[in-house]
Image (cartoon, rainbow, N blue to C red; front, side, top):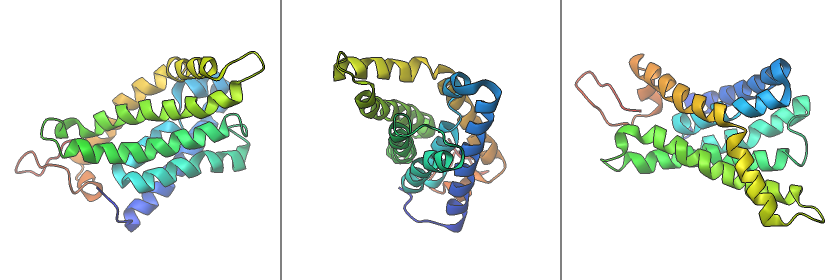
Length: 201
């Protein structure tokens, strides 16, 4: 599991955090909150950071990104959306990096380690978001578990387009980095598939 903070990884983390803030602002300008929620543009760079830079830098990227966005443009709103989203993205970055390492150690899953890690992180992050977000949805007539059920359902149904795009585009980006000989600089522990040093994602 990657724990060393190299210059490449730190710079990449900062760059992806900035990209996340910019993407979120662009989607808000193009279609407002519904479109931004549907495509979840802030999630994409954080998940990619967890894979490329490891769980700790992924966690830092996920934690800082919503806070920087809130400080810059006032989104996501505090505390109803900001607090759950900070925790959600923190788990995204950490779990993606951690689970990629776990799946990489298993010969049956190492070929698809990054994709499997993405799926686990997406589920865990949304569960964390719902767990915390339900507290803000509670009212005099709304019990916590009812609010949690509504929140977790919405976390998946309202972001389905983002889930699909992330599962398609992130592996494509990793494949492009692999073909360009760049991926090995981030993921030297990736298993070698042939004599040309091609790697799996």
